[in-house]
Structures are given as C-alpha cells and as structure tokens.
Image (cartoon, rainbow, N blue to C red; front, side, top):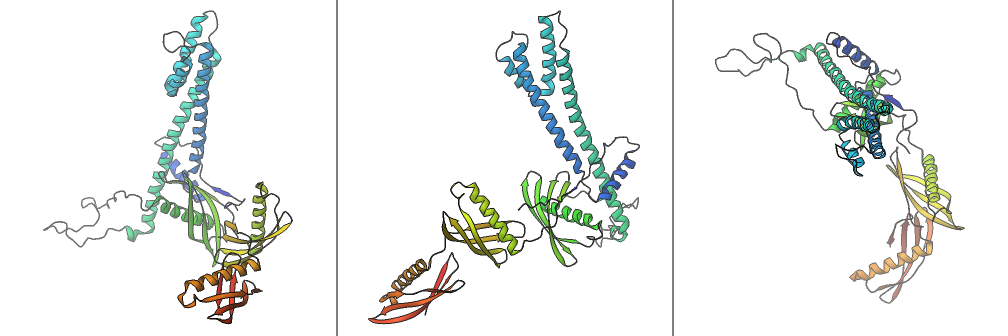
Length: 442
C-alpha cells in the first residue's frame, strides 16, 4: 500500500519577483510576510520548484548546443585556431564547449567568419547566429534570475526572523527585561551586569547561536508547527495536536513519513511527503488523507490479491490458484494463518505470516504444513533422540506412538515404550502451528 492517498494537499509559498528598491523593500517584505502568514507556512518552497525547472532548461540548452557544435563543425569543417580543419576538430570544439559560456560564442564567431571567407558573395549565416545568440541570452537570464531570486528570498527570511523576534519581545516583556547579575564585574565597581549598554541603557543583542540538534530533529520541529498551524485554520481540526512524527529519508532532500495526532482523545495517522533544505531552512509539505487501519478481513483480502499478483508474474507459479486464506491477529502487528492453494489440481496448505503496522504490510508464505503421519514420525524421532541423550533414559526404547488432532494447534496421543524390559504407556501432547511444533511426554 502506498503511504500517500489521493487527496494530497500541497503546502508551499510561491512569491512574485522581489524588486530590490531600497525605498520600498521594507513595505514589500512585510506584504510577503503577511501572505506567508495567511497560509501558515513560511518556506518559499515555490522558488526551489522553479529553480529545478531552470536548471533542467539550462542542462538541455548546454547539451543540445554542444551536440550541434560537434555536428555543425564537422559538416562545415570549422577549424580550431588558424590551422586547416582536421578530423579531430569537431571533438575538440565539443570539449571546449564544456566551458560553454566562453567557447560557444567563440564558435559562433569563428563559424560566421570561416563561412564568409569561403564564399564572400554569400549572405552571412543569420539563422544560426540568431539562435546561438538567443541561447546565450536565455542561459544568462536563467543564471542571473536564480541568483537574484535567491537573494530576494534571503531578504524575506531575514526580515521574517527580525519581525518574529520583535513580536516575541512585545508579547513577553518580562522575559526580555534585563536581569541583574549577582557577581560584580570588577572589584571596586558598583555596577552589576544588566545585559545592557551602560551609557545608552539599551539592551545588547545576543550573538548568533548555531542550530541545535540534527537536521531531522529540526525538520520534525518544523513539521509539527506547520501541520498544527494548518489544522488550526479548520474549525474541525483546530484542537488537534501532533503526538509523534515518523520520518524516512528517501534521497537528497526528500523525506516521507507519518504524523500521529490526537483529535479530541482519538488517535489518527496522516502520511506526508516533504522536501526540506536544511541549509536555507526551506520546507515543502504534501499531506495525505488519514490512514485508516484495515480490518482483519480487509487485510486478508488485500494480502490474497498481492499473493495472486506475485504468482501471476512468476512463470513457475502462474498456474497456482488461491482457494482460501485464514488470517488472525496474534499480537501487536503480527498475524498468522493458513493459505490453501490449488497446485496443478493438488491441494496444498501453507503457513502464512503477516506483519502489518497500519500503513504497510509484509508477508511470508511458509512450506506446506506436515501431514498427521509426518508430524507423528518427526515427534517420535525427537522423543527417541532425547531419551538416548539422557543417561537416565538411555535404556528406554520407543515401541510405537499414536497421534490425533484435537482442536486448533493441539494434538494428543499415546507413546508405548520399553522401560527395562517392561512395557509402559505414556501420554504425549503436541502443539503444532503449521511452522513449529513442541511436545510434552507425561
């Protein structure tokens, strides 16, 4: 089962381009912060989505133009430098285009000059020059745009941090009031440490502190706040509180996980997918619909469908058909049961073990259970082996053993043994769950 359900909500902030006009920067930044506050997520995640698109566009332009340089230089025999063209010049031009921003324009100029020298009467190759120049403009635009936009986001984030610090001081004046230090600063000095500048009376700003905890700890804290802020905007979920956050690192900045929350005493679980850039403290969150644990019957049917699908994909098992499955919860996330399959017209029973945590399940189909005669034979062999290993019973010999199924996993029978020349009958009890068995002789 996929951890993400269809109803996915994308929580991100995509802001317009930030003008860098010093006279209006503060007002515009405040407007961006108000927009962020409306959706409850301060992350500017839209920038990273656009940046990925720009990087892809740059990559395509660089690759395609480099390939074109190799083909075109070979077709038109454009030499490198002043020497005549040779077969390796095309490859050399492509290698030089690794430093694209420098050598691609050089190639365009060299191409136009070479073709003009060969045929002065012909018109200049306008199309290739225009397209090449356009490619250069697009590349420069993408690079400069990413740099300027990233700088703009940094301005927004710095302004937001300063705004939050100011609001915190206003809401908790007692916590921000200067406190006196009981230890004098210098002998003979009547002043005590107040955390303020003695001449101005203004509180000094504390030095920047490094980020505390691991990136995953910081991500959990951000997720808890963002999810609760999101729920707070809905009357039906405003009192919900996140209890735990489980995280699985997929790759790069990608994580998946689930948030377990308390909804008025009822525990619910919601899957999510998140992209988190710890260096820039940017977060993009996708919340899925509530995960509801399957009932035993739903789990049994789902496991049956999965088993049949796997068998159908395997040429050696594609003719096997499932006749029935029994499944019962043992303890915690563990389930056990019996799978009855039709194998080429022959009925086989297999043990089945399932582990299901409410989100995902795994299963193991065991070997076919032992028949009654096979179970009796194995138990009788084990009894004789144990008697031989024990000095007190090494002269006891098993004559015969009967065994019958009682109920569930319970079996019972009679062991007839020769004890110092005398025949004795002992009762035996066997527990067999389809995988393992134990016995007890009385």
